[in-house]
Length: 126
Image (cartoon, helix red, strand yellow):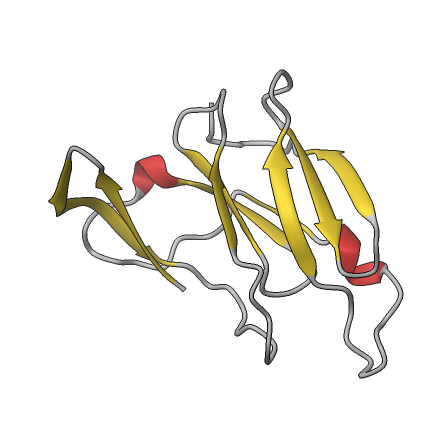
């Protein structure tokens, strides 16, 4: 769960670093997704470890590699049909809506597709 942000023009010096509190992936899980919000400064989303999508505000990250709290966690896929091992669906992909800044789409291993907005008091991305 360690993320390092770098500028592609100068990859030798990290801009910021964080240790994200994301769960360990299930065996064989290879769906890690990290994406920048196209219309929100400093926001990124992470998925692929379980049935959640975590949204972070990276503007508060520095080089100390602290563990930041997510700004929002979408847990909707956790309530889908469980697989044969009794595990909830795994988020296999997510994407930001191109015209709606706080809207994400996420798909899971059970075939579900969620389109959701995240808004909460005190949100920091923007």
